[in-house]
Image 1 (cartoon, rainbow, N blue to C red):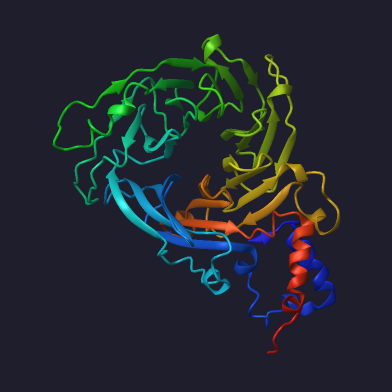
Image 2: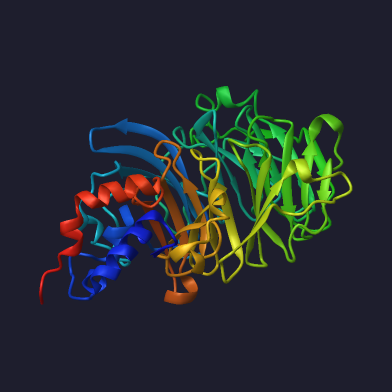
Length: 455
């Protein structure tokens, strides 16, 4: 965990020139986590989680909110794989005391995360996506051609023991010819679902006629042994030459979407013009593409992440139907394959990227040109590095109800022999606020910052 050319780093760097004691080991009251974070909760997982998503806000209080959290448990087969619904207490900004933040223990289970319900999933939960119009409705991908739809509030709580009967999804979406394991998205403006798979296709469904009846006719109710309803595809889109790894709706349109795959291509689609690509960037990266995200505020900007260790920013106005188009910028700081990219829901220039190197980077593309002073040794645009995980960070999600709060999960199997880690964290606001404001605030505490107790 370290600052990357932030206003706080610049401020502390100036003070460090005046007294070396500011970073001396004997200054016990200054530790890394309280300086960099406004809040950090670490939750050790018995099993790795491949996906994590924020659910609805269920309670607001003075100092903290309570919110649903969705995550998966990828087991070794000794117990079933599960979709977990947890209650999470989100401490509000500037509430947590420094001594609380400093109590970082990567072996602990956080008291802020409580399991609320368990759904026994038919296979590993590779990806979870919530329906923006009703975040109690979620879609999951597993190692099969189908997409599973769940009403997580209506589903019964199950005890995950060996031999337990699998929970019944409320809907099954069919259309893929081979396994569709990861590429999954749900539309912001309409109850549409998008998926990609090993059959090299992108598949679109509408669940408009079914979501209103999910709670009253839940397939998860064991008292109703009726056949689970299935929905056929509204459209199947061909254009990739290899597995489709991620898909994303345009934030304002249910008819426009994009996809990336192992063929190194970024493709833009428009359902109104047919099932062929509108724009196909043949060589978006130098390796397989793992992830894509469309900016919810500035819809001209699209992010991609790849096995070539880079994140690339594209402006769709620069892309043409013959595949010509180069990225606006290539972000290079990860030392392993990028697994997830996601724009901030609050700031159009801010985004995050996580990778197999165990790091989750926060970027500000507006700061690409700022390379003076202490920031010059960092990658252009890098705002913050969260290095609290022990192994590859497979997924993360910004909290729309508390935009600078992030939940992230890592698969720690290779480094620890099993398990995973879930972390909920928020960087201190001194890092992203305007530099003038930060310096003015730090000046008020100048005597405290420059005073170090003697050993």
